[in-house]
Image (cartoon, rainbow, N blue to C red; front, side):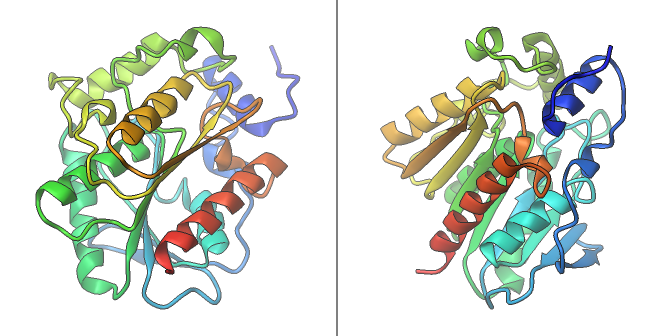
Length: 282
């Protein structure tokens, strides 16, 4: 069966649901123009430096992929578009994948990258993540607060995965072609490797959210994980966190990966970049 959708992001997830591995995820986005790319060995990752980047501030970008896929290289184009929109140098961190690496290994890795940025950069640091990258972003912010590290200036969470038990009602109401409740629970089980799915450092819905920085969530209005963003936003408001949630009609999971190829992805990345810049430049 072939897809009839004109949305390349939805078409990719339809292909994945059929067991096809093409198109490659990284090809959804266009090249982000004149963003300079520099590979770093320790911590492993990629610096993405747009022209006219502000001196001082930085963004730590954490890729998604369900803890089984994704990489700094696969997400380089999307994060490059985000860096350009914010006009801020962005470090896309690499971390280990399951089954070789399980909770809390990934959180330890991104925390180490954050500590490195705190010592190597002179300005405030924002954290951005998509899907399980957003999972790690919230865990990192909570750990920074609890360990008395300087807090990130802000959190940008794209199609956030916050409920590792996949209890949201939008698994039953959206038109997401790939992310079923069974699949997401399987990804969570692989990451947790026996740990509690309500561990506050693993599952943002069960974290202590008090004292977290301003947060901007974006989600597709048709994605199965929409309730993950809605419920996290609700709980953040209860914890007196400044939070914004934008839902994009007709879109499914991580639609921002099509930056440069769809108007809605460009709109979302543009809004995200402008918001990040506003939190980094006061």
